[in-house]
Length: 200
Image (cartoon, rainbow, N blue to C red; front, side):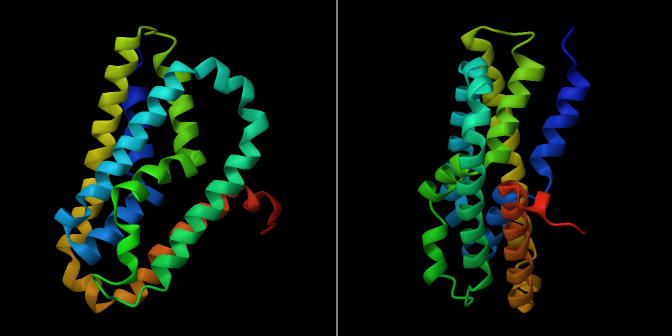
């Protein structure tokens, strides 16, 4: 029997908690508004959908080769997300200025392939909740579509938060940018595995 409650609990917890996609969605929407951030959001969910499909279709193969590519993925993903965090921190507050290059479809799409946490989410959700119960291509597509829809709701909620609290975020823009940037950098450090070598 399909474990519906654990599946939904895992999906919503992993999707709605702070992460690179949600933080960048909020930051971009705060700067440019929801409508102008929509291309970025569509890039995020398109990349996420692609990752889910690949994870489902090549689940067994990915599990076998993950140990060999995980280090590369962690380093590359950590550097890319760290770059995004630094870019958010050094934002000068110009709504159409230098930060515009971070608010487009390609950035949203490519982020998914530089985010080992998202890739591992796709692999684990397929390996533990879907593949054991449903193996047809149609099932994989339908589950991927559902998970992508949830992801779109998540990034949209974070983006709308950035818009609704625009006045507050604008008033404290520098502090907010530093906080969001540091959260992205923390995500990058966590993803890259550096935290394993830091003894608190």
